[in-house]
Image 1 (cartoon, rainbow, N blue to C red):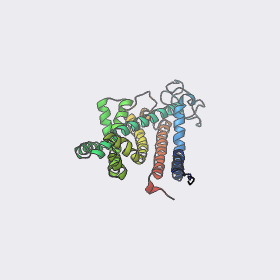
Image 2 (image 1 turned 120 degrees about the horizontal axis):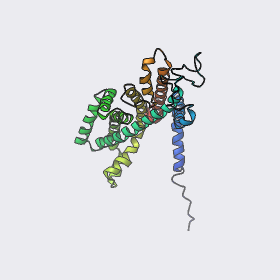
Image 3 (image 1 turned 135 degrees about the vertical axis):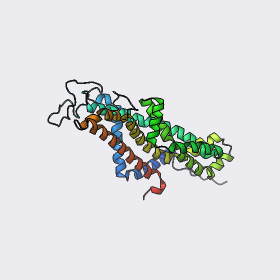
Image 4 (image 1 turned 120 degrees about the vertical axis):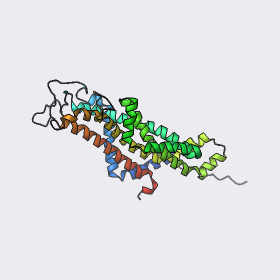
Length: 305
């Protein structure tokens, strides 16, 4: 009777090791884009500022100092050391309002992306999986939405729903979701004919399982990049609606609303429009740089050796 030989394990690498290897590879390609790393650092700082805004802001964002109207920044000869970036037309501290404004801008981006992603993914999966009249109906609606300039359509929707921050976020989410729907539809159509989907179907998987568990996870790469870019678009369009008076309403310290309330003082007190504009510029630029890095790291065609 021969002695049994030991059988080596079929999977020497545990799942956790595989995940760490995949994460390391992702970070390797992401870190090759220095602009993306810088954008990620700036974005993390903005998130921390938004989280700790009540403790970082030197003043309340709504507190008015009647003896300090349109005070220049502290480094100006006429500046006041109490107000590092000066004050606005009603005597509110600009730095405190910018810090609290980061909360509103990041919340707007998060809410819009989650809403647009949820609706767009559902419509895109249904269109790409079932095809036929379902695909034609959903895609024609998406084409109609995309036929209008996004800001104009969002402005019309807010005019119908009524001015306000929540209505502005809903309108922007509805305007941005066709991009997710079209992207998911194309990815689902490409994945639907692959062997693993056929095997899952033959094993008895239902339509819901095939769509959400088998196919959708393999479409996440492009979705993550699109979500990042839509985040910056949402901040820009919310700021534009606020500037037009259809978004967040005063005295909310939202950056677009701050620009709108200070535009008549652009020559007399340029800092009241310069600093909110810079905040929008830096935030959108940082998020776009992160999106470029994610595209390089997640798209196999763009990976460099």
